[in-house]
Image (cartoon, rainbow, N blue to C red):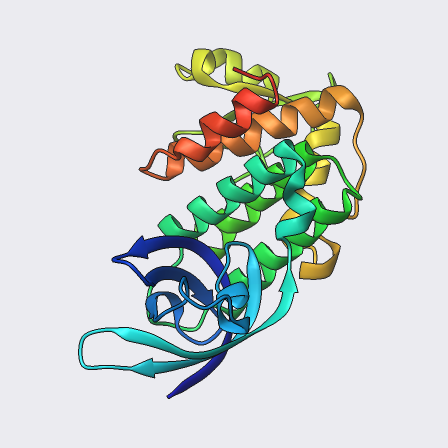
Amino acid sequence: MIKTEGLILKEQSVGENDKLVTILTRTHGIIRCFSRRAKKFSSAVSSACQVMTYSRLEIYEGRDKYIINSAEVVKSFFDAFADIENLALGYYICESAMKMIPENMPADDYLQLVLNCLYAISIRKKSLTQIKAVFELRMMILSGVSPNILFCNECGAYESEDGSMYFDPIENVLYCPQCCFRSAASNKCLSVSMGCITALRFCMTAEPKKILSFSLSPSSMKDMEKFSERFFLSQNNFYCKTLDFYKNVKGLN
Ligand SMILES: [Zn+2]
């Protein structure tokens, strides 16, 4: 029997009475478990197996599948997601987590990041734009791909006097303005304000509870939104349909 905690990322009906739930667990990363009779009886187990619920779980390890033996709600985020924008970002976070987090290995850091972001969405202490950008950046770092934003790739400059640096999200390199204009990559580079670069550098090294503890001007926040999303999508080879949903409800498409 596996005893762990986990966040429910997805639920699907199977047959008349059963559900198949995808869970981000602390001890086993992403796993898929059957939840027997969860639909038939509106039991405590059933509410602990709802999407965006963080639950204490006992999972029976069968020969070829996992089956939930007992489940108890620790914290449900679902009510906080009555707001459609909150919900859309929550879904995007869950879908990205399902695609990126390994199966059957400890996932403490990932779980903490996802829970921190869902909690931040639920209390709206920071804008959704900021939470999304920080989530994308830290997910990449946890999966082993940090953005190279400490120095200009060519001349080693740490900052630029004219207030912006340039980032190539595909090659993952930073340029100062002079080196960017000289390089062949200049047309695919994003212009990123120094304010945004400073926030990104902070966010890369901040301890998990502090990752959202910064403020940016609206224009630097726009840079960060673009930076994180382009970096995230360029470095990952997948498409998230929930990202389109998020952009639609935010009026960004
Ligand atoms: Zn340079």
